[in-house]
Image (cartoon, rainbow, N blue to C red; front, side, top):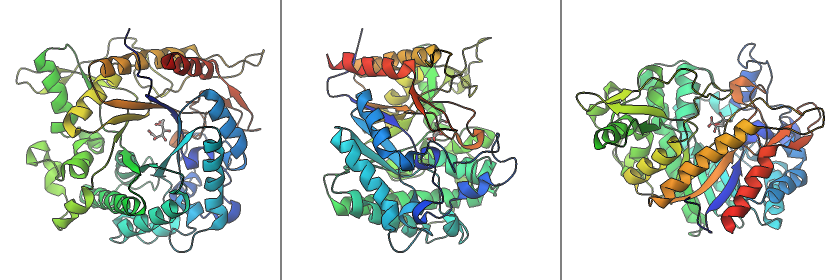
Length: 451
Ligand code: GCO
């Protein structure tokens, strides 16, 4: 059975607002998620990231848990509001100090820190000045990036600028289910999309200026398709689904091409992509030069896929799910083929090495009377998805690593603490961490792949 090369990168992932807690500590100022969590009904269980996993106060404990797992890298994000209270200005020494300690604790255990600069916790004070709509927003983000890379760039070499712009642009500003909870007209949302891509480009420039040893990417989450059969027609229809046709309705933001084509190919899709293209803002052509900075890898967040077949005209047609299809606690279908076809078609179009920067599932986990947390569904999900990823590698797809989402149960945004994604169970009252069966399975899987 195909397996992984000895130099394959194994990792786990998290994000600042979802694990750190300590949202009032040491000068941190509120993010738009802090504000939205205070709005009754915004989060399903009425909770917030105020406590989360208390990782802010558990650097050594978390680093030890990650080191013992045997991964090569830990992907985490930086809280803009800790580093630059208010979003701009002087660096907060206590804020950057947490990340300084976390980076050192990881390196001491042979774990590479992979940093995501923006994972949705936008500074409330900058939002009050217009947020991503403000023409200054790309520079705000670039200045923040500069502060982080100056503090950590001597030890951190792998960077992702934006996590899932599809979510913070679309769910945050069009659908409204994510912070800042807006439902703006699409032309304004597209201006936000454009400014976020400009922010990405400026941030890449600042990272490059700091050291040419850095490896820079991002971590989007566009739609993933997989063909009903491996006929050329169904495969071509899947390509069209993923890249040439705007996702329908409110899902339009979960596009790959609207974001990745400007960032990597230096242009937005043409009008055949859909009416959304006609709603793009007017912009200076030089913007695309800024946006399209050379990057070193494509971070793909892939959890599920849509089964696609070619219609009579070759157009993509979604194949209905079979009755009783396996689904996770997020009600997402279990479709491991997505981890073969997603990287294969992304690498084919964008010609970059691919890292799976997120993949995982929410399952019903709790400690049994003997204290063990058994999660066979997560083990099966992992096994099936890694088998497909190994098949992609065997077929020559340039996949270089895999980060499991997540190292530990955490704050699942609008679902609060009701969806557990961790390899480690967290008691959110005490902060107690309990490795689940999947933690040991993943550790052994990594060891086995190293021979
Ligand atoms: C995302 C985010 C993560 C989520 C995870 C589970 O992909 O939505 O990057 O923060 O928690 O994906 O939904």
